[in-house]
Length: 410
Ligand code: PLP
Image (tube, rainbow, N blue to C red; front, side, top):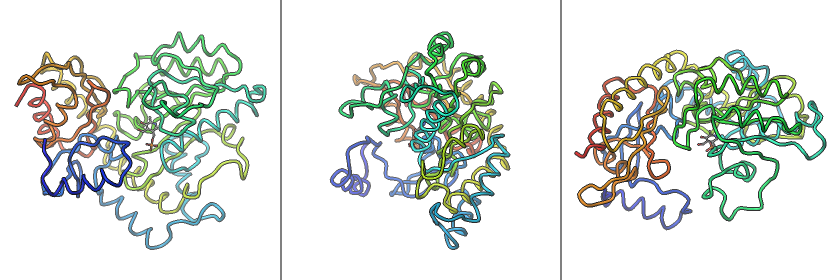
């Protein structure tokens, strides 16, 4: 796929002045509305990535943009040196909705994960009485929780870790979806928490076996260990329920949210937990200049109201069923597997030759972009499909058509 001369100009400036830590498709976007985006040449695309599930409510949702622009003219940031008149109402709204006692506001997903890690260790020392500096946190193989040093210390991905050591100790890795391995690791009395994604997003939309979440809940409770669910990607209606943990009616001890918490408008993240866990933090022990700013509080509240008012969890469940059954019905030899829940899905591609050339997930993504659908490969052979949940049935069916054609050859 060859960018237009105008697109190429934007790409060239980034290539010259930016860091080289991403490899985007050569598409330069300029505008978005709902499930659609347009590039600088005016070409229209269906957005089947949703900024890695941050745009669940769709691009430029009028209610969220109105909340943003109204509040932006009034008060944006006070820091936590003072109270503001939006934070408490937002915290109450979220706690009432998700049935937690307290919320700690942060900005990016990674910051919320860091916060959860610190809270877990602190609870381990203050409440569980783990001897000083011995607390461990169990994580899963192939996890993705973000990019900070504390988080990549728990990563098993060589690309995330190479050249960034020394790492922070205190992690134990178990295979994802393996309750027996978890049970064994939980025997260590210095374990404070088990942090995991209820469905692994970046690993390629890996769905654990049925019953895993319930088992995690039982095992962690029995071991007096915090169950820490990272729902930054799976949360907020994406998988067909408000939280992916809701699929098995389990409630974690610590819940991490980000991405769609702002409908893709601002970096807004949060950690929710109980009085017991949250109140281990005292003034001056953790914080963020921007966390809990009134602009973010108003935007997050509007973003969650949109999910509720437009029944986006139910919509994701229903459209996700259509999406998977249509793709599975293709019976294509190049599609090994289609998996996912709600509108968080992936196709595992068999690398093959087409017109004498190597055809992997990346080439499929390029071909789909040519025909008006944006998605991104994760690893060499997996393509994630996660359109905004506001996508219409007609748009979904157009998208499915483009995906099928790209997989079978236009
Ligand atoms: N946790 C999960 C499960 C994620 O998928 C991501 C990002 O993809 C993060 C945390 C990190 O979020 P952010 O990129 O906002 O720091």
